[in-house]
Amino acid sequence: MLTESLCSRLGALLQTSDSAYPLGTFSHSFGLEGLRQMGEVESTADLKAQLHRTFVPMLLHVDLPLLARAREATEKRDWSALQKLDRLSAALRWSSEQRKAAGRMGARRLKLLESVHRFPAFEEPFASIAASLSYTQACVVAGAESSLLAIPTEASAVAFAYQTLAGIILAGVRLLRISPIQGQRLLRESVEAIVPGIDRGLGLRDEELGWFAPSFDIAAARHARAEERQFLS
Image 1 (cartoon, helix red, strand yellow):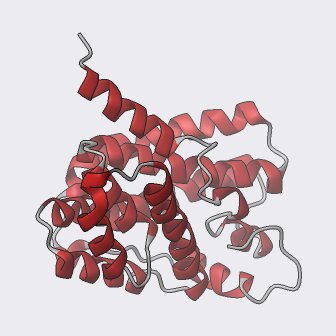
Image 2 (spheres, rainbow, N blue to C red):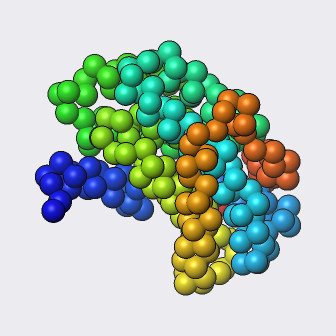
């Protein structure tokens, strides 16, 4: 039987990962437009390859481990650790455009946490979270949010990955003119590729964090100075 507490947590998870939740993801391609401009992604097959070669590994080696650590730091009210994770997330993104994009979406998520989900019990921890996050990196804010809303780590990680992959594929639908059905197939396959690596990804050591993707970083850097573009990143 579903308890009231479980239903409340499930509702919070569904709301914060829903496409209608105004995080601003629709304005970002997560680097895909830059790859398209370089000729790296020109078809559904190319997009599928990039999802598995670049985006899924980046989630497993950067965003999801930091999300889990941010949740733990928030649980312990270790604001110094949370601040370090925010800085680490920014440092692991070589392109300034990607750092800024993660910061914009994180700032939006933090603002929504305050305006939509804030309760009297949140006052002290929310103020400390906001004060700790100079870069408001999206994965770190999502980890803190997971703690305050009592959403399990694994569930938050899967939801964050789903939301990110959905944003990339939606950008692909707009850029490559692939059909929505093809997009949904890619999303299912990408999520299936993420799930088996969740446990290992959440337990990575410090020296294992990060993902080397030079073509992606070059594309993102070039996209920042592109004369024409549809997306902020």
